[in-house]
Amino acid sequence: MTSAETAFQITVQPSGRAFEAQAGETILSAAIRGGVGMPYGCKDGACGSCKCKKLSGSVVHGDHQQKALSTEEEEAGFVLTCCAQPLTDVVLESRQVTDESAYPIKKLPVRVAALTRASHDVMQVRLQLPAADTFRYHAGQYIEFILRDGARRAYSMANAPHTQEGAPGVELHIRHMPGGRFTDHVFNAMKEKEILRVEGPFGSFFLREDSDKPMVFLASGTGFAPIKALIEHMQHKGITRSATLYWGGRRPADLYMDGWIRERLAALPNLRYVPVVSDALPEDGWAGRTGFVHQAVMEDIADLSGYQVYACGAPIVVDSARAAYSAERGLPPDEFYADAFTSEADKHGG
Ligand SMILES: Cc1cc2nc3c(=O)[nH]c(=O)nc-3n(C[C@H](O)[C@H](O)[C@H](O)COP(=O)(O)OP(=O)(O)OC[C@H]3O[C@@H](n4cnc5c(N)ncnc54)[C@H](O)[C@@H]3O)c2cc1C
Ligand code: FES
Image (tube, rainbow, N blue to C red; front, side, top):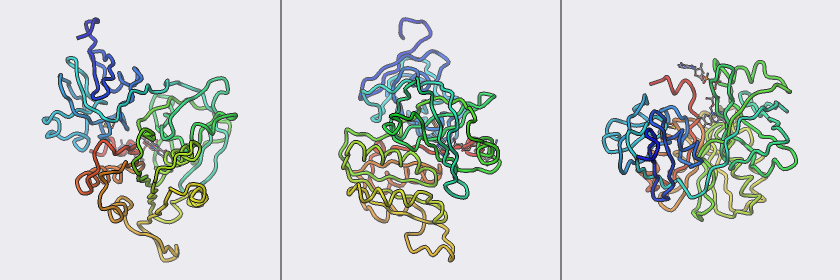
């Protein structure tokens, strides 16, 4: 135990990064406060992104879903850091944690600068940030809107950080979930100039630039948003690693920035693009790949052991990819980087 009676030392191997967690605090909130970039997604026991192996120490888990951490996994020593409170000093294993410190997390007022319909159910929202305050983030990270009663909704930034130079602002791609508290507002009532409060940056979904492995970018629906930021960032930094984007939607119109990607292909010779549609109708005239997007990757790549995978969007796609790529294609679990876009429906759906 550390000097303060109620604080415990949490160490993450193999990086050796360490931080203090107070008794009663989750390991993940302490890591975020301490600027240590642990992997996570929903922060609510629903997605499993924060799962890591406990090497020593003991924790108590709060409520979480079995699909995020099963009883067998818990017995085998795995923890969900977003729900686990330390009872002793704890040593965890997470190869995704690096020496690099996370960017400071800030609460900011933002103004809606532009609302553009990208498809029948996707709104491109541009937020203007305060000019006086530099907002730094990694391409791929997300911000949270803080609603009046303190509830939060997460959205990934679709523009790379360098695009802020001169015009501090972020671009979001927000899909309408009918009956959803925030997206009903975005689609039915939001106006330009509206002021909202956000906090960020959050998230462990960003490009690991210390690797030269070929990459698979897997996006479903608005899961394309953070991947767009990665592509912009790669172009800006002249990163020439090979990357193949698989973007899946139900109908062709769901691939709402198809043209944008095709323009990038000319500038990025190492980028490939495989659009995949699961429910095309005859009137769509779709002649491309069909089926589930995560399966298209498996059809094309027999061995993922030398790859990194960056996956974003619908939780079912992210979860299926995470399980199948490791079990059936040899992807090292630590090379799967993801943000599952969990919503209230996933958190309460059991
Ligand atoms: C890390 C992260 C990044 C994300 N990035 C994006 C992004 O870039 N773009 C994007 O479009 N989305 C993103 N999301 C999802 C986003 O945060 C919201 O969850 C989503 O937009 C829905 O918000 P909402 O308030 O409209 O709906 P919610 O109020 O959360 O409701 C969602 C759905 O569940 C139903 N529902 C509400 N409460 C319950 C309940 N108690 N039981 C059962 N069903 C219920 C609603 O009717 C609705 O259909 C991200 C999520 C995460 C975790
Ligand atoms: S289960 Fe912990 S971040 Fe989702």
